[in-house]
Length: 265
Image (cartoon, rainbow, N blue to C red):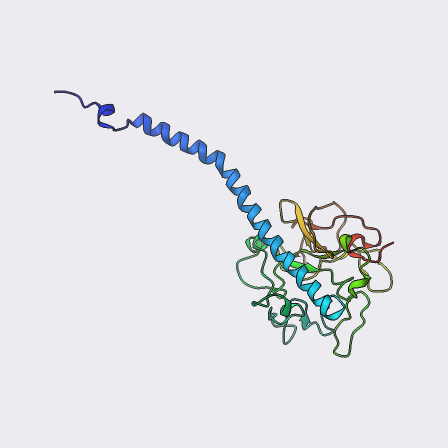
């Protein structure tokens, strides 16, 4: 009886199959980091586009009103990113000061990178800002605490932003809440400033360096940059979160609140 010739019949041997699987495994191992890097790069690009939309919305608001958008009102019911009926209710993200300038949806488009990091169990009391924070202290009127007749904080006139290319408007933000993160709508400066001069103590930081150790920052002139976190002390977190462990912090100079303060010397 003749033996079958596998080569002649087009079949493969068991050893050849193992060799093919080994080559495939090596190729997968080589390509996985490239694919992973490309995926996270796409998330960063998408987030940058959302952040750029916020800058364009605020510049359009300033063109119409002569001032940047207010951070919020006195009762903390209406903010730049949404409105709520009371402080125990979630925000309606289509009713913020910037909503008319955010296209048909009237909403902030969430950062896809932060969405991956948030807990799955549901919303938090700050949701609606999409993972982006406003320079509320210096642009949104929170420092001076001057309010109009409707109780809305009077924001900074756009022409008073003396260094638009060096003044932070929006950035990627989050807040350390216990062992997890949540959205946070304000990008807090290195030191508190309540209008009586810059204090010598810090808030719990909200600038989030979630893009491979860097934060997305949008400036008042419209350009965007990636900034690396710089080690420095952080303020007390009243909700028990560890800001440093969650990659929250600051960058740039501390003096005069650095890039947050448009009137710094």
